[in-house]
Image (cartoon, rainbow, N blue to C red; front, side):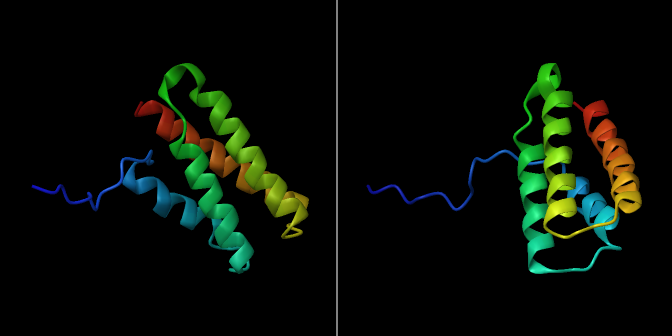
Length: 99
């Protein structure tokens, strides 16, 4: 008997509510394809965080990469970046509480 490939992938994922929260945080930014790429990279980075021992370090790296992309690629103003950073830190704290 031949085994059929699975249609589900065993890949890291963030809790389901995280994606909507990130979308809400980024909602006020111009919705360009490059923003979607930054958003997806941030979510993938968060999903790769494993366990509470290194989760804060991983979250910091993920957030700083997103903020850097918004600064350099999207030319987002510094005051808005500071607000986004604050809101993303709050989201990451909520994720950490659930670990």
